[in-house]
Image (tube, rainbow, N blue to C red; front, top):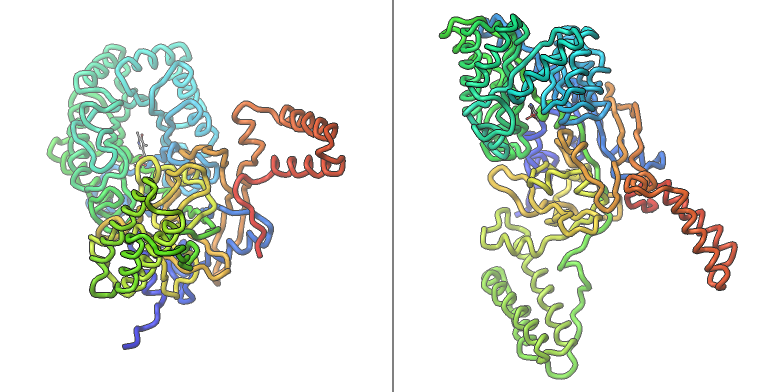
Length: 635
Ligand SMILES: *Cc1c(COP(=O)(O)O)cnc(C)c1O
């Protein structure tokens, strides 16, 4: 039976692309990943990378697609507009973007611009973030929410923001912040707009469950909330209380948790209105998820609802409670960050090498003289292994290898025998790999085997700089080759980065049912092989760390044009080695002095010529000014 050729459709299914792409990525018939910011617009990622390489730029690189960012802002706002229209909700929707999710200039400015007509605002959680937000052009009604613990400086800056005509709201994270705000407001003569963060007893679901509930880090309890109302009433400032704020954590996987929290929040809002506080905004916080694995489940890397359902359920729930309590329908605010930014950027990493047990030297060395019995046992397994017995034989081989090593340690097995035994073991693995490569579904008990057999695709990037959440909280990101997707991948691989840290690896991959230990990849064919890491636009850009002094990576901002064309609008160079070194307290002249002192001494000692010295200093300077990642000359 001849099997049908592997097509782009098979690749789309294999990597679940339609399930997680949100419609923004697809595989072309030619087997290449395309970005599709809106219907009819498409451009090929590997072409963009090739152009950058041609221009002499180095990889890894982040490809940013401002059109996708704009698209998400529109989608979110239109989903809420549609929901308010459908239910006849009398209040409005006004989102704010919590910039901690990604403070990169292109992202904040992109969202502020795309959100202008929707009066979509920003949220700052620190003084630095507020300083950044205040400088943005925003719709006069757009909110600028100030969350996080605050000192007098933070509060003053927020109050000054109101005098600049910005709709700044100071969210009280704890009761004692009220006095601070009132004191500064009086001193400055600026009337504050105040929000209160309420500790819901409802909790999220997924990895950030602890952000909600009674033990939450932020927020006031019910009694404190009422005290705030009383204080403001005494001061005849009750109209300064404009917002009730809640947040039960990020990446809420289960829509029921959202509904329960929104219900509690709206009841609280109604309670405050009943106290005479004329609140205008009900802020339901962040938590709108991203379906990283495309499984549409409550698994932590997924979500069991769509953006449309989220908007509909929030609006419906708020309205239902407001009707029952006969209170005005407030302007609904959400602080969606992850959902706005995740899709817009793709990290492109080049595979620089492949290693693995089935790739070591493949010939089997002879033993000198009569080999040890355990080596003979491995020979026998190697001769007799077949499709019928490979599971059993595999277990025997693992046992024999263990014995081989134990006997070696005790001096009973020679180095030659050990070499032959290990080579036989690897040959057995290669045979098994051939035997199971045709099987679509590998039984669970052989999953370990798959891990052992997996190739290590060495990728030119740092996990700690570019995908910190994969390391820190086991976040999953969809990963695919950018090219060759009309070709059956014949290898199973894990990814390792170029840091010296053994944690710098990816060995968990998305799957519709489960988490996979390996990723299907192609046998290298001599051409550059690039992997795309998708949905990496939320949190990763800003949480990354400088492990091994690998710095921020290069970025290209790309606009897609009709006819499959695209334009690289902006190229932002990543951090140079010098900057990384200086960030640790060194100064460039100091480094150079030290090197020159050493070359002087080397010349005196006759180890170095003056010509060599010049070359050495040139090379040193070049590396200081260079990219921190591997720069192989393209063949
Ligand atoms: C981090 C944060 C958000 C963003 O949440 P997402 O799940 O990324 O949308 C919103 N509100 C507050 C208070 C936050 O701390």
